[in-house]
Amino acid sequence: MRFLEKNRGSISVLLSIILLPTMTFVGLMVDSARLDLSRALVESSGALTTNAGLANYDTVLKDVYGLFAMSQNDADPDAALQENLERYFKNTLQAHGLLESDDLDLQSELLGELQDIFVKSGTQSRDSLLDVGYDSFEAKYVDDSSLANPRILKSQIVEFMKYRGPASIGLSILDSLSIFK
Image 1 (cartoon, rainbow, N blue to C red):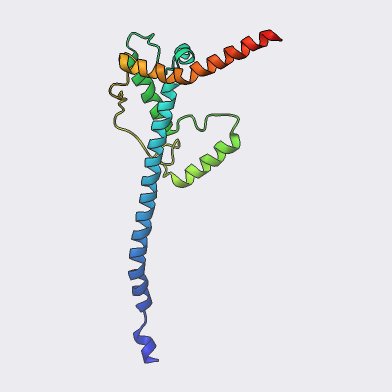
Image 2: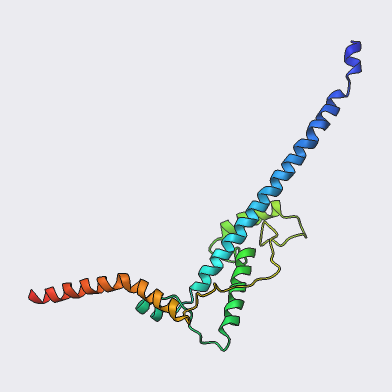
């Protein structure tokens, strides 16, 4: 019995020694998961912004020559494009408009409940489970990629015509053969 009396409380010390590294490890895993999720969110927001920016291409130029180019109707097209891309990036990154649809009542209710669980009251908005923001946004052009460069323009047209030329010749031969019916 004396042996048991001397060991009282030792399990508490042992659990304390085990609990500290375990909680530290769990905290590191949660932070690394949030970091990976944030990185993926920023990458997908950038890709979606690029696709949205390219959606404003000139369709006539694309149909005739296969070139993706923006028509320049504005006084300063670069500033307008920069503002639109920044707005697309911000809205995608912060998931604005996710809960505004009336058709998705059940989904918005479930998302709201999830956000109430994960978001501390008063610290973050309910628009995002991650509090991700950005300091600045700048869209840069790739050097020597403008269609104003005659070498680039010629190479793009030649690449498109490699495939369009033979297809056009084949269709014209089929049309001429249909005359003999």
